[in-house]
Amino acid sequence: MDLASYDTGDFYDEMFSGADEPRPGASAFAKVLSGLSAQDLRKKQGVAERDLLQRGITFNVYGAEGGTERIFPFDVVPRVVSQSDFSTIERGLRQRILALNAFVGDVYGKRKILSDGVIPEALVLSAKGYLPQCNGIAPPKGIFCHVVGTDLVRDRDGQFYVLEDNLRCPSGVSYVLENRRLMKRSFPHVLSASRVQSVDEYPSRLLGALRHLSSSSEPVVALLTPGAYNSAYFEHAFLAQQMGIELVEGRDLVVHKGVVCMRTTRGYERVDVIYRRIDDVFLDPEAFRKDSLLGVPGLFQVFKEGRVGLANAPGNGVADDKAVYAYVPKMIKYYLGEDPILPNVPTFSCEHGKERDHVLENLAEMVVKPVNESGGYGIVVGPKASKAELETTRAQILENGRNYVAQPVIGLSRVPTLVGDELEGRHVDLRPYALFGSDVWVLPGGLTRVALKKGSLVVNSSQGGGSKDTWVLGDRTSSETNGVGEQRPPPGQASSQSQTQSGSSQSQTQSGSSQSQTQSGLSQSQTQGGSSQSQSQGEATSEPTGEAQEC
Image 1 (cartoon, rainbow, N blue to C red):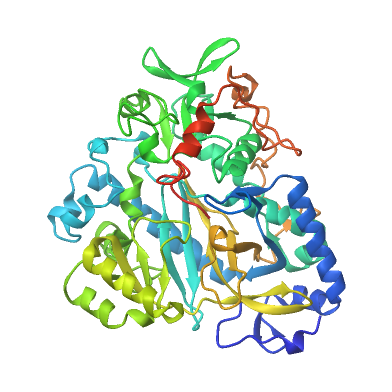
Image 2 (image 1 turned 180 degrees about the vertical axis):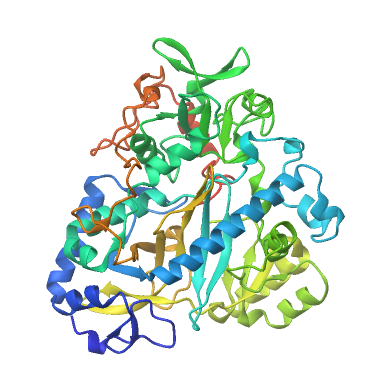
């Protein structure tokens, strides 16, 4: 590949600081890349795509023409993150998650941050994700935010900013693990030379964080999915298989004698912890949406009484509101007494006052977002919007300003991406994943989402985006590799494969929904009955997934 002709443009390029000048840490991959022909690189790309197809690594796009199931697009050129950059990200995310966890607990508890006037009470209580039913709840170990996916962007000056927080059901980590598997096959020696940190321990770390919620010495853990028609179903099946736990639907569970049980061929088996991949309002028809067929009647009451752990805890959506997001720096100062390590993107409320006036006066230069949408839906990028789109947006803001925020356009950093026979820069963001168990742990990697359309700033898969492997570099002086080019997890930590024989995985649910298998053993659900199908399809227009966030 001719790297000298690669144009970094007027953006921060993650691999090159200038024409044919790789950044520190990216030189090993750049050297290999320069030695490959376009045909060689296309061949590696083709092998990766066939692998994704054969393994059924797909996602669903609701309302798409020509079928809903698609292969998740993958590009073989990785994003490289230096150890110093990741150290800043790691510290910043830990700080942010601790503050957000304190905020959610405060909102459903004493509400001191509201009574002290740090955040407007009306703003918080009007958030769509605020659930009055959660007032007074005390989740196990005081943890609300067990699994967090935080979206980061890097501007032209190289500064990372937090774009949004995802505290309900953040998705996409399965693609992180699968992307790494593909790169081990495509560039094993470059991984070794670059001392890339491993991501393989995520499933065992996740299982440990879930088990931390139970006082039992051998807690039974299950993953609750909306079913095979959910957009992230592959991930649900993948993670359950990797952790060695049951994959269940709502119909597989029942509240019996004050505890949650699985229906198995041997009778009821108690479940101690549920990793729920269902949005709050679908969890329990007795507490939330009465028409939900996805949840478990009585589940929320058992949770409130402390007899089952739920991850993530219900009610977290109050902190996902993009208008509440603007106050996270104040939360950090209020709860931790610290300045934010990772700054927010400047955010303007469209509800009223000077901020709304500023947005309306500068609409053509702003990015306008609905406060409760995910997956890139409803975003209007002012510089790329038509006059009609801007006028529609203006009318929507004037009609319901609480539902919108606006931000300046961030010149998202770029990474070389294979386009035909050439490498072209494409805009990316980064979603690192963090787990809150006995402490906050950040996966040394993350989902790099790439806007495959030239010039596009929208990276979401549902809007035509794809993904790249994220290489977080390690310490050359103290790391060890596992023979495939990655650093091994520290001694004494289980690998992601070591949990597949846990006791909870031995039961067979009566409906069969927990025994999901694909061509690779992961994603073709063999269910009896049609409740999960009818519910998923029936809610496709208003609440399409039953799960809060898409990648």
